[in-house]
Length: 289
Image (cartoon, rainbow, N blue to C red; front, top):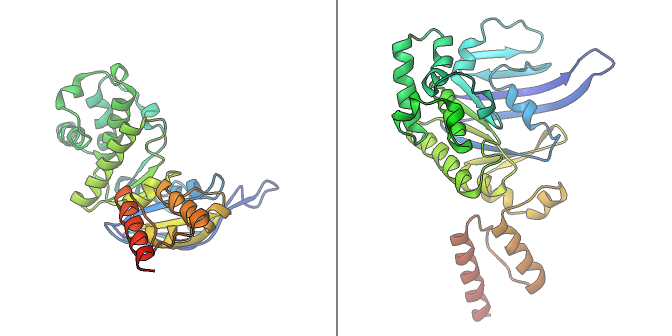
């Protein structure tokens, strides 16, 4: 599903002495089936931006277009439930929202809340639990008897059971170990490819942004500072470092070689294999010269 923001601004507690401008002049077009990463330091407006993507927040100026719906400032919106079914948000530590006595009931809660029959909801739960790499047998267990990583997957399955067309991930791997983080991120990447699920990742991990996203948006002081492919964004790492942002370790290593040894690289290395190729090419150029 296509999502777009046009001249979007949001002010918290507007028209009060406590008014605060959170985001402004946001123009963003998110193509159907694409994978977009949003990066930026704390307070840059990332969380405010993502809450506009399913109507949790309304713009105080501009338009948010979600499929065939348009949410406009100063216009009353009725029945936002269909939008919230189509756009699923996985917040940080989603396992904290688990509450029911079995995994199955927890996953079924969302679909049934939107009018799906119990039988159909159970079928969706079976499908969703497989999508997060777990066996159907876990559906009969209490979510509170599971490990932290398993609880995270169950919570994600609850979002997937709603069959969203867009999924928004707000630091979905927070608190996980490196292996757990990779498994979860690979799972979302597979869903995006196999189901054409429009995916928006809000992250502090430059490695994840570089590895998984088609495009990256850099937020700074409440607005979009830059947008481009991972290669475009990390081609000028000094600019990101000036914004108090990090860069992938491979790009940082390139930057160190460039500064300390005068090595010139053609493009940023976004993976270890890319880094090996770039170093090899740099050595060849050195031999020729």
